[in-house]
Image (cartoon, one colour):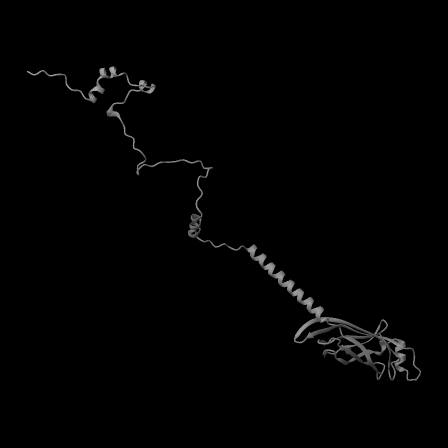
Length: 271
């Protein structure tokens, strides 16, 4: 029989043999290797490297911190898809707008009127006594008639003046002696016209010196008689072309003196 020698040993057999490890020297060990026992092969768990697609991670961030600002493109997209809501106009806004419009129109109208007045500068008409006639009563119970020719002048170049009927009175001092009406008439620009006034008054209402003047037929003239012709609330309408620019009520007063109430009455003085 053949003699068999010891079986051949490989590198694995050498490393697994504790005697051989002792002859080669003990391996370098650390503190962890001394205290920790290696886990059995059957209990070893494999930990995957990196998350799998099915894993879910919950990350909590503090609410008072902002870690990322959205890009401007996201804000534009949100604005495009946001529903448009119509803003309701409040009553206060409408009232304020109406007040502003009213003030603007009032200001424009005021400027227009002031400009119109100062540019055109309408002047009031002037009056003067041209002639006076006294009609003697047939008896003492009749009224005395007076005819006064009043000269009216329109000093405006391009404006016409229309007069409406108004109350007229004639007085001697503080004593009224006759009443009548101013007739309606119209004066064009720079026009002069004689207006006839017809007045009447009771002879008993005349002062004594006026009655004596009426009955005086002598050539010797007495002292002049002071008279006052007054037209109260005389309506005037001033027109410029087709536009009526001014309406007012005028107070006209003419003070004058006559030589007598007898025959051939003459105006000797007037203001």
